[in-house]
Amino acid sequence: MLRRHLFTASGIVVIITLGVYFGLFVTPIGITHMGEKLAYGVPAFEDGRWWSVFTGVPFALTPLCYVAVVGSFAAFVGLAEHRLGTARAMTIWAIGHVAGVFGAIGLVDLTGSALVSALDVGPSGGAMAAAAVLTATLSSRWRFWTRVGLVVYVIGSLLLIGHLADVVHLVAVAVALPLGPLFVRRATRNTDSAQAVQLLESHGGGTLSWMATWPGTEYLYGEDGYVAYRRHAGVAIALGDPVGSAEWQRRASQLFAAHCDREGLIPAWFSVSEATAAGMRRVQVAEDTLVDLPGLEFRGKKWQDVRTARNRAAKDGIRFRMVTLADEPPAVVRQVREVSTGWLKSKHTPELGFTLGGVTEALDPRVRVGIAVDEQGTVHGVTSWLPVLDGNGKPRGWTLDMMRRRADGFRPVVEFMIAEACLTFEAEGAELVSLSGAPLVRSDRGRAGTIQKSLDVMGRLMEPLYGFASLHAFKAKFQPRREPLYLAYRSTGDLPRIGVAVLRAYLAKPAIAARPWPVPTVRRQPALAPVPLLGVGARTRTLGLPTGAWFAGHPLGAGLWSAGGRAGTPVAPRRSTRSGSGSPAPAPAGR
Image 1 (cartoon, one colour):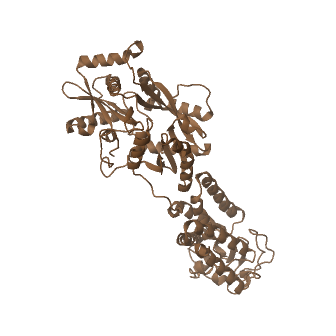
Image 2 (cartoon, helix red, strand yellow):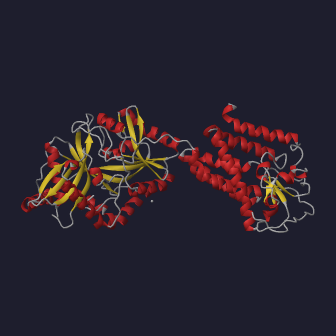
Image 3 (cartoon, rainbow, N blue to C red):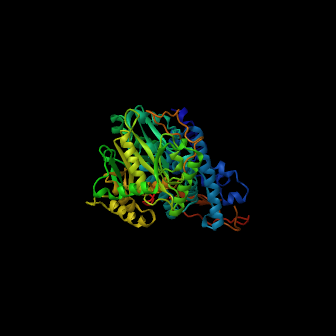
């Protein structure tokens, strides 16, 4: 126990020992001959006693102050040493104390505050810095409010009490709060997708599971499953349903929340099914569109647009090819990139990521790519399809990802490519295709809460830019069945941070792997793996701490209040002789 808290125990022993030795548990330091020589403040620095920042540490102003000094040092520094280790606790305290004292003296001197004549002693600045850093070790649920309470306390103390010590505390907390994450030990980020691929092959996954093997994803692994997530703005955004055994899927939300608490992250589940969202607060953020392939025929009036596209393609000499883009000649790959680049430029919006792949993801040998080519070999459009694996490592379906067409090419090329891809997958024995989720769109217009209504309004406002509703209407040509996709979260107070994190996830530049797809050796079937101080003249010197102040050279008044109270009024203070200066989806034509 003592070894684990060596710095804290040593500090308390030194404070108490010196207090007893100099009689400071019965006599305020202000009436002793050494008080002014040991204390720090603007007058001390004017006199050249910069070392007073260290000599004033192991003391307290009054006997009553020792309770607050020893208590705060034991509580905050002791807990920091317990959680972060001796070396880190010492570093945090030293940074907080030195920065707090120097910063406070600088602020007081530059602003010409009445505290320019005040002196102070004690280690409380470093203790407050330790308290600020400790907030980074708390769970996301408590971290924010604890920090708010700490900031309110230091600002309130400064306004209500206004001693030099309160300025020191404010500066120490302001310096230490941003440093918290640097001192908190976090688990090594697991970004290796190889194990995820193996578990995905063994247990199967959903229509979004393959996206969670892309670079930039982190993984929480269990013995028989995993959760894939992205980290942005202090939020862990789990993408899609957990993959693994039924027992793992049942416990995944609790294990993920515990993992986020250890990492100081806010947990959120994005685009998950109703089963995964059960037991959490949720709001619908998208709607998956699924086409069942067995017995698929483009007959009847409702398929008129699809039949028209296929007939026109045959008339204009447009052929459909299902290829592995990585195996295609460089000329074809170059045209695919040109089509994609041209489409992106026409949208006047940045290329998005997260659940939206591009040509880079399409070059994965496990991704199927459909292209429409005319008789001259010109590529008019391109679609990419991600595998939806069953529990045997074989694709039971495919998810539409990239969907691009040449601006001056065959107009109904997207309808044509999707229809041909569906027939190709049906002939191969696949069960379904997903046309991907339509963001911020709901078919069920029943009762909705305030948050859901807000998302509906947001979808309408963003329609001119991203065309969410238009994309949804376009997919309706293929007569899909619809399944809601939810954002599941723990607390309504987390939603602003989650919203920022999701936006940053979509706008973030794709992570760059060491080589295109660094994963286990690729096999066509059945396994699939992604390839992946200035002074002021004539100042009156006073020594101020949380429980009082004295003017240098005069005894401290006897009428002390409890901790935070003011000391008695001094008599005829002398004057100094020294002076100085003192943080989506594309339009229907593509994805």
